[in-house]
Length: 477
Image (cartoon, rainbow, N blue to C red; front, top):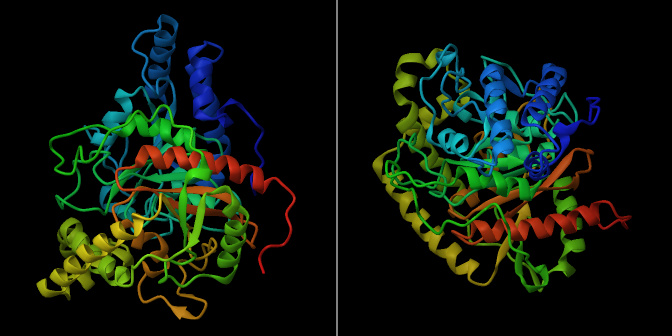
């Protein structure tokens, strides 16, 4: 890391912290102050936390201390400090969506996901940075500026949950909230060396979407390891009849995970999903990982799913989503909106119903094909990103290995194609890439198999931690 950090209690895992508070070896007040001290010391360099509510958090920490003392009203996240991505409304706490249009917005309500976290005992400490309305793989906006990668400050954290990823990587907070459309939980998690989990759509309720039935945007947890991610997931799940997607699929107890024997699992491995241009260094790093981890599974087959239309499907339906969410803003405030939002809106306005119908029809076929493909596997593993982190000064990649990116989402195809499947996906750290910056893999589980995926990912994480700390031969050739 570029940043010097003296280890403190805030660097401990969320599960350990929760246990220490329950045994009363640690006070929620002490934990919160440790997080605040870290934020004050490190955030000026990283710019991950963009708004805080310390007074309310301190009051809630004192309440949590009494709850632990009396062993009363204890919930899964009681006493744990949490950051909320600045795309979710938070009562009394500045919420800008990364847009100058909302620079002074202080909501008088919490969005559903924030309500769920508070009900689970979480102490909301502040908001984490995001690009304007979560658009783009670079966490930067005109309100707060860029979030810097703590492993190399001149590089990007990715996006759009880059503030949450950087806050976790620097120990500012043990748990953070994020959202994911084309990979916004997964991309920054990989580039910052933390975990990001995209749940099956509908498992975490949302009352803010403007399209009733869509796989696209989901809320999800981020943490420094898989088991902490699952713990936070226990505070996010919940039914809400105002969300037509809500309560789809089984609801499991995410506080505890199953012991999974990796040797019982059938795994598909794909370097590029058959469609994504990959940086040579990323491909070599993933290939080396796959060679080392293959013996850990019952079956490990290099097999690409049929996703040949995914790029065009995703772009058309993303434009539909942007018209639903931002067309009025574009008509009234185009001069202050980011270029990415304008590009999506204008592309959408140039399309017709026939384009949308074609994309929907192809999406239906893609979904059926992927379900057939997944009948033969328990998991699919791919790289999380197509490129290593880019410099702030250069921005999102315009080409990869000579392949020109036609729009800003093309460099996210390894993630956005999987969004279309509706399957849960987790990104977990897996060492470093040739540039020395964090490298991550995506693990895809069966639709509605969120608990199984987290359990399997926890087992794989243990293997990865062993492999990445063991001497290795050169397997990149």
